Amino acid sequence: MNRLICLISIAFTVVAGAQNALKTELEASYNGWRNSILRKDYASWKKWTAGHRQMEVRNRIVSEKQSFPAAVFALPTPPPSLDGLTFLNAKQKGATAKAAYFGKIDFGVGGNPTDNLLVFSFIQGRGQWQYDRADFVNLSALPEVRKELAAGNLRYLEETPEAQPSGVVPSTPSAAQPAPYIAKVYVFCPGREVRVHVNKLSRHRFANTKEAEIVIGGAKDGQNEVQFSARSLEGSSGKEAMTVRIYLMSQVAGVKPIKIYEYLAKEGEAVKPYATEYFTVDAAVAAKLAGK
Image (cartoon, rainbow, N blue to C red; front, side):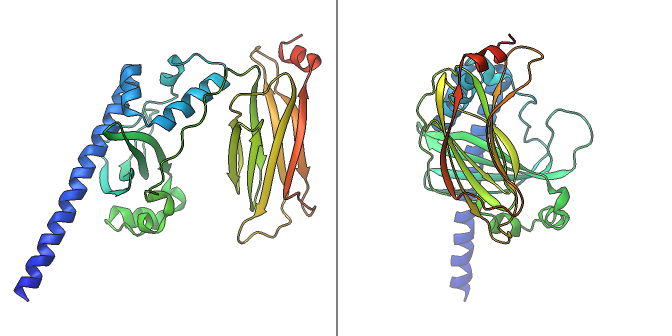
């Protein structure tokens, strides 16, 4: 029995030691990335940012016709510090890892932050962990989860797939050319998952939401392609309304966005499970965007 207790103790010590080592490495990665943002240091940002994320950020910026890399550092709020937050856990699967923190997450916008959850994602590359992204979970609608995490109960993290490392390293997208016209895809899809591809380059996934995202590569002169697929989610009636739209955004002050494409299914109407459709940017549309 004493030997069993000793073995269990050794195993626990090894696991705890491995998690502490991983925590130290991941925090060094996040702090390196955060400091690069605060100092506006592009070389450091490249060092600490996962390769696929670098290209995704670059593609989004050129698709918004902003200056790269200057716009990398034009964030609406500074990245939050880990100071004062409670470390919950760190997990690794293959070349991916997650680290979770709980507490009053300060985005530098003032006010009195409440206790919420922050989950960081990392990718192993160039011989070190590199920062990928952060997922902020507002626990206002999950008061029981907030109580559990405050008490050290990590059930929510264990039962939430998004809080676990997947082991899959995302592929690096192709470099997008600067957008001729800035475009956004808007989807309203209660009870459904909708996937949208624009010009076979910009890929989007929406689930039970109302949301808009920038179209990578933007819209081009002439014919543009929109592909979408839709499927009902568990618990839905299958009769919910659905909308897919493409808007063109002007860079001229006071010129409103142009709705260049729309697929609309009203409540109770049949929804196309899949479609390939088109919209055209002609001289008249270009003139409107230019404010003429």
